[in-house]
Length: 435
Ligand code: HOZ
Image (cartoon, rainbow, N blue to C red; front, side):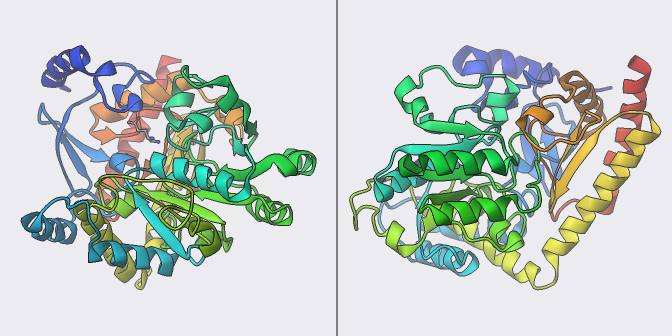
């Protein structure tokens, strides 16, 4: 029997003092309905809610926890730092160590600035691109989500897509005016636009492997052509690798695809479970950032010792694991899982399309290929919601939206994945019987 009475009481308290009862919209479960379980703790691949229900976690805090919850070495490093203090508002040597790791692992990054979130990283990178080029227009792609920065909350993904809000209220039309939105994976439209407007375009920004409209795979040659055409016209190419950085490989999409961006935004894994973000790139661009240059950006808790310690510990563990084929094994584990999931859906006559790369995947409830926002939106949100709840009641915690990414971590073992597959077969059968 699936009981979440305590969470029901908690959400009723929460909504009195927090919009929607949550501090980030998708967690409110509006896309799938019902009450979100209030989580009391995590351990390895597991989450536990206030009613004592145990779940295998495929959200992993939306990406940061590639090592799973409560990694022993990360926690040990944090405990040592805690004894020394939580924040100083002054430079620390750990920040140098983390910056050096990022520079070492991302050849496109000569210098990097630490901030507190992916949103801050993207907001700063966009301001820097505009300041460096002296141009105003930014090109983004429909369904790509770059945090909640005004100029990019235009036809974005994640919660904006989940709740069908193409442009958030409160964004001045003049700001949205300088944002051009194109369909992802359509290189001809991008080429035509850049040929026409390159004199006004400061930057093209994208999630090189989008994870916020569900996982979308770049078509063969798409990223390479985006890089070539932005290079040709002197347009700054910003890769938002907040999800994919250290997720797809140590050097993110850039390492996996062999492409160098001009500016890169990072987040999630680099905080090791604590709030952190970063933006970095070529030295001649980064030296325009205050206090060296005239592009201002600041942050009281930027580079704070706790987040830097957790991030550094996580990255050091990943560097060691990568030497033994960690990323290849994680991708193989995810591939086997997604192939089996596909077979089980087909066996029950349920149409799904799975996009999977590295340890990221999304099962879209549609029979057609999903390669951009428009095709993703053809998925059955109703069927996804049914699948979500049948899985949750069977102890599997999936993203509460069709337009998010499932993550598999180092902590997910064969038993976890088998349990999720068995629960999926039951869920698919029940969905079939309902239709
Ligand atoms: N940006 C997060 C995942 N793409 C959404 C998290 C949330 O709204 O809780």
